[in-house]
Image (cartoon, rainbow, N blue to C red):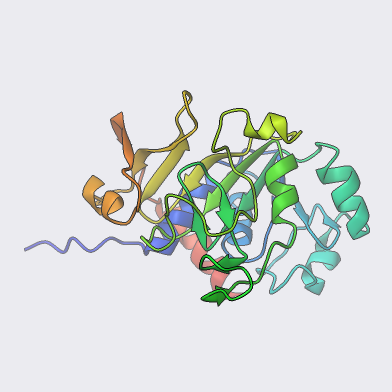
Length: 254
């Protein structure tokens, strides 16, 4: 019997699919962790002129290895310039100069609202207190578009987040315009199972693609709300040998 084990891990296909969304020449606000992996994979493959912006002030960073934090010296050493944190937020982000922001979260709801603050109904006595907001609310509000990258787990994909750290698209279509947000919000949610995008009618996240070997029921089982499925449902392209080689090399030297 042929071995049907995929030639990639769940984290690898999530990173590869997310990196393909980045176009050469875009400006990208990069967080640490998977977002940084994704952005640097794109920069080392199809988007060599991707302009990476890190929260601590690095503009045009070109790290050889993945940074450990936003204050990693590798970012300043390889950047075109380094500016103050107020300039990053007041001019670059709030001024609408950044094309895309990549975010992750502990919880996401059906309208793309993100929670990185607390798990549980009581803010003062939560079940789990999370790291908090950081720059995520500003990224979600002011980048021209946002892509969310996170593992697809039932505890994370909830009908309503326990705390809205970063506003997504709802619960009403006019939510973002009413709040005066400049950006379009989360237009892609990339997981280790597939891709979700907002329905153009009511902004509810809808499954538009699954990764090779993933069944729709797998995605629905890991989602706490009745997940809509697009028709036709697409299947993402498998990672190429080049993409996997570059990704694995990037991780091995970090």
